[in-house]
Image (cartoon, rainbow, N blue to C red; front, side, top):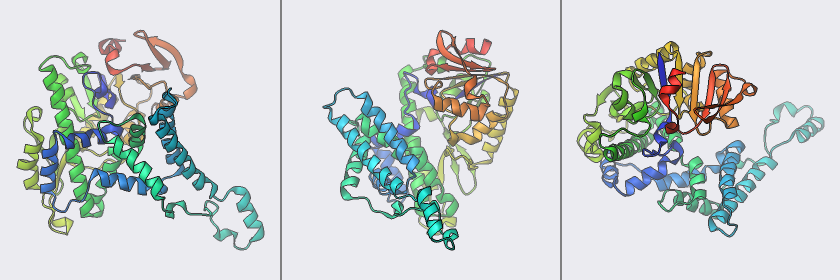
Length: 439
């Protein structure tokens, strides 16, 4: 059996150009300020007492900076520094803004690092107070940075930059900062926990954010479909017949090409929603021609009841989009069947072509399915597949040691090969899938 596996990179193809997860929030907020105003209004009517706004999200993100681990702060510095280094004009205000962000983050990291009790200090403590040493935490700090308030100057700079990331006039520095601090997948994970701890405010936040995401994706999908109006879609139009496919995307482009019976939507899709108390999966008719605001008003809102303070007496419906948790929540029994089918297809496949999937730790459930299938023929396609971080992830999932790769070419594209696995550095639409499956 020939199996195609698609990640977010497939929907980044020129002509489709869906935003990646870490740039989705700016796109959603711009949609809600424009074509999606009716969606925002319909959801707020359905969720009385909703307090969530994306501006409030920015305030919370900045206020919680001191709760972040040092490694997380350093990753923000690295991301922004890459943008700063890419700007040649030293007089550029954007470059100077990036330099300021990096400088302030470095000062925050410096405070956190310098306050930690190092080994030399801890050993000295044990010598001076030998009887009390067992009561002293060697990983403690002189100052607990998690309890320190940030200055108004610091907060103003970061809030202003993050607000810029949500506008159409965003610059590269603001975008880089927003990628890390305003990630919609992290936000969904955080708010979904409300269903487990019966926190009504977080449940309402999740309902609002998830339906905003759904509406934006439906809107963008319809734009793509109307642009091509029956003509073959970029990338998807070149998928060969006679194969099976698993997608981690929500869009319906794949099933339009191969038919629903030949596809597994591992993270759910746009054409269904879930009633959370009964776990019923309800189809949305004619998703391609759907008016998001109308569906929310006519179908979603009448099935939402959040006025009772006791969450057990409430009723919630959410899009059938599985949050990117490492431990997947069971939105409906159908997903158990789908995930089992995906596992069977991976086991039965002779050749697997992976396009635009990052093997990220957030998808460990799916990675585990791939992990038990060492020795199969894999072609992995993506623009970043030769990056060291990606190669390390491949080692963790497919078991290929990082030192085993040999440089080669596939379809005149740079590639690396180790055993039965090839990493082809290319965008989704740059490879001939038919040839890859025949090789």
